[in-house]
Amino acid sequence: MEVVNTITALRSLLGPIKLAKQKIALVPTMGALHKGHLSLIDLAKQQADFVVCSIFVNPTQFTDPKDLEKYPRPLEHDLDMLRTSGCDLVFMPPVKEMYPKPENWHIDLGPAEFLLEGEFRKGHYQGVTQIVKKLFDAVTPDLAFFGQKDFQQVLMIQKMVNYFSMPVRIITCPIIREEDGLAMSSRNIHLSAEDRQDALVLSKALYYVRDHFASLNIPELLQEARAMIQSTPGVELDYFTIADGATLMPVLDKGESNIVALVAARVGQTRLIDNMILS
Image (cartoon, rainbow, N blue to C red; front, side, top):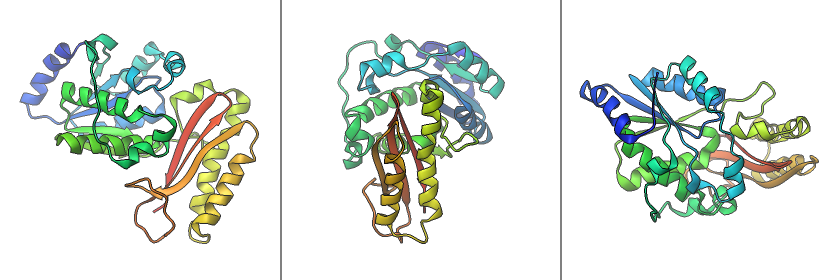
């Protein structure tokens, strides 16, 4: 496994792969890797000839400087995991490599940018699309793999790809959960033992909605799910919604074809998100 820190070195290594017309996959990450990330690499290996994983904690997508400061960065652990995963190349640039000079970035991501996470983390998806565009320009992958846990993020990245007519296919990969249902996340490391137990209510509420989707109407589902979360000490609900998977607007008709339940809450000092596709 090669590890490079500059775009020049990255392109030098990828040149022969492109000349051989081999398919390149990119798995963008911010490090602090877990089994969810490795599942992306496994799927990438099945669909491409060469897998690049990027590790870059992107400053422009953090709306709270303290959040950026405390984001975990266990680089040696991450590299060990990537070596055993069968990843071919790791791109691990410093901030100056990706942002050599100040720049203004703003693209039209549509109304969904300002809903849910966009409401709580204003400007977040501008920062996300800014860095993903830079990574796509550097790697020029055929395929890029993202986790479904960041459902809204994948939607915004697809809009960015459409905006620039980029020739990359975005593939959304299923959420990987702990045995007790908690969605795997780099942020879980910040949960105390008590927080960890409290956090299970998020997946329990999602499973409740999925399991009762056929028998209850949407207002009933929302009322029960929100009550479950709000009655759990130590958990502060930001939102629980049942929405159109393309627009993130709330839905009331269960007959629609693309419905997803999404939740965000603060558990102790840690903010977690999760979701479940319902139809």
